[in-house]
Image 1 (tube, rainbow, N blue to C red):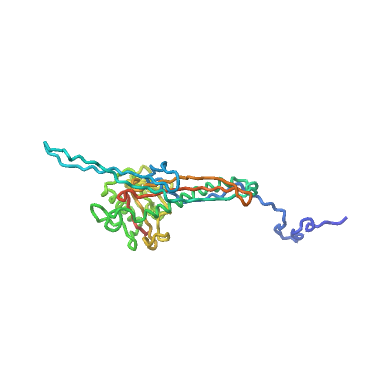
Image 2: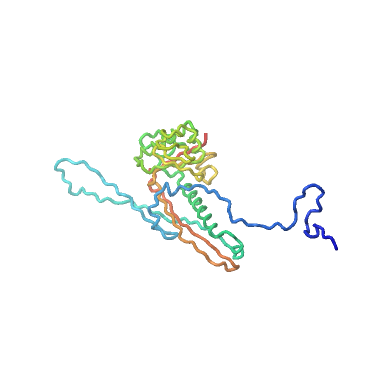
Length: 325
């Protein structure tokens, strides 16, 4: 009776053990596709929190236009006893602002039928979820870049302040160097800038980069009593409210390595603050559809999102140009 060696039974296997362990190198190890996915991390988006989205339900497709009427100005006059008011009545007129829905972004994915059968996860659903998150990031990045240098003249620069003209908010090539010792002062400067424009206190926001958030956490604001909030500013790493501003962290703010048209220099970041009346933003997913691929056996899923953005009250928001110190 012939003796069958391990090498003959398992081609490619290691020769007989000589005393030292030899790792298995045969071809009998199966490939297993896990149904579990590695979690992805996405940049936080802030547009919904800092803008006025009242007109979002009024758009239907790319190319739409929303006409927005502003409150008219009523003239106040002096009155004395017996004054004749005939002919003095005013006909207030409203200024018109047009919000053009002229921006659009899309995504499209293709799944082969064979791949769908072999997959043990819902590939289309997974891709759609990822596209939704990426879409928000793309739109946030675009709108925040659009806002760069659009605040009213007295809400930016080294002579900001409608009344005082003495508030330094930094400019490109001469940014504010922000560290833990002065970060509170800089937030107060932004607050004063809005106060001088008579911007309402309720609904104020500030969008800051991660490095400025770190300076806040290192400053005296980590004491809850100084932040005016009921909880410490360090609670679970989430920023709260400072001097009437709700703070939002974003890594999508314009900075020196984004195409800013020369408005920012090396290491500089634009930090925005304001009120929700400053920016009008409207967005809508107008198409999500699936269709069969003509050239092969498979399915295409694609989506279209349209949006428009318009700064309608430049006096309601401001800009700091800062760099980490």
